[in-house]
Length: 428
Image 1 (cartoon, helix red, strand yellow):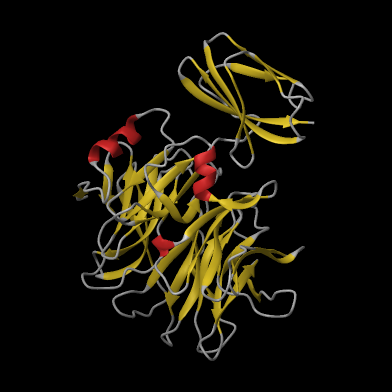
Image 2: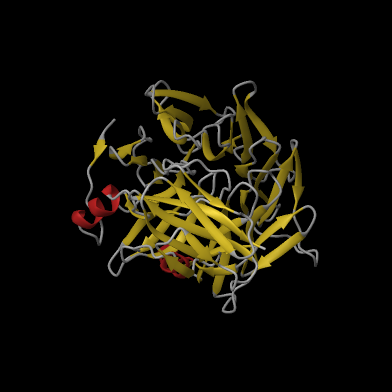
């Protein structure tokens, strides 16, 4: 594969290498201005969209090209990577046919698997990928049918590429995302006039989504891993939807028809959602990214990163596009004072049973007053953050008094023997 050498836009190579090589680095600049669209759980593999081709990035190799597309053709679709970083689904030309199509690439074996289409070729393309399960067992996207219209498709090793159909004759549909068990697929359906509305396929049956007033919602871009929450936009607002709750808006006080938003990605259970608001019409890199949790509601992603104490490398996080399957990495596109850049943010991991390289324990947890940190290593720092990312306590002692803090969930970040560790703390 052809190596694509770094020429960082708006940032010096020295700044990038500093961010990449520090073991505690939490913000990275990725690639050469392409859009970051997916990331592995450990952050070691990021896939990128470019106008001329697709790419992937690793901390060791930098940016690598993912095959090639037909010269001069449109690069459709969104490349994705599995949770373990071993398999990438992308759009590439099959060297045997000369046609762009969905394919998978095995990074360890350096092997391609071309998935074909539904028998029709339009503008040198027969299919394109838009989503994949975390283990790579199922892939979704769009493929051209015999009548020339694109239909949503789902691929598995057992079934091959399956046409999910269109509920409107001679109109297109597309699958954008899929739940981890493969039963819930999110995307869109065009009506007979070409208007595009949000849709989902549950166990292969398509349903259109309407808000509480009976209005159809816009395109659905993402689904939570458990299949419960679908994300997208409704009018000028970012929104989420479930069968139990219906449409729930993620509002911004400045939203209007010329300042619009959308929710773009979520973790497994929908407890963390990212998205954006931006002027319309306007480019993606000029938006304002946000992060939403049940505890905090919507807050600026810029402010969230700042409150975590991270070095933002001068980036405004305009469009967070994807979250890793475990919810610890965010990738997307942002801007510096000069140019657009792709970024990766490494978040504190909130799992109560996470395994750390440094052996230590925190007890009692939950607690109403005292936290004890037990370790044989050297504790140099303990910082407690609330769920908005604000630092509420800092110490170098092994016992912390949090009796004065409100009840809720916090993140404890410790540095032991020079290694950073995080644990979720429950104040009862």
